[in-house]
Image 1 (cartoon, rainbow, N blue to C red):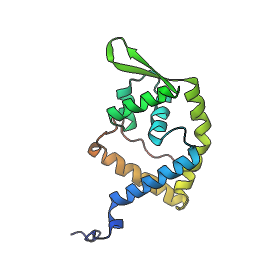
Image 2: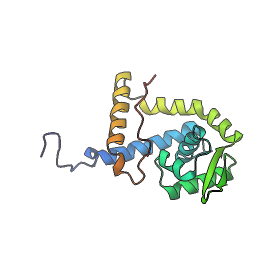
Image 3: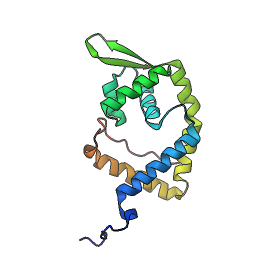
Image 4: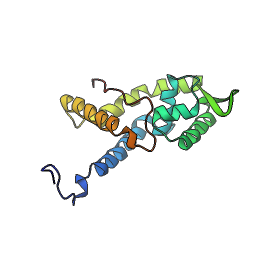
Length: 164
């Protein structure tokens, strides 16, 4: 057994458990800062759609790291809310082309300050140097384990940006 590995009797030595707890905390702060209009997954899909107009929902799900059945449900909900439109692709009637609506664009714009507060609050316990290290290590962890996901990212994981 490597020196860095214990018997893992303490649950809080399991990285997966800590990642799950971090996700719970992140979601809680998400709703505090972003309100109840969107779920974190809806926000991710809408944010990615903003820069990929006309993409089909299968591809949008793939670049968002969401399985296709969840992605279809999320797109339907976003359409019900008037935040995107889905149009049948004539060459493939099973696929839908997605376009963000004006209301969707406005909502994303309105959520920018909340997303900035969310990031600051989530990373606040860390020093500036630790924030950069954490984001680099978390990005590496996700990138290197991407293929282990039930919904691997097709575009890969981008390099972390500097934290300000």
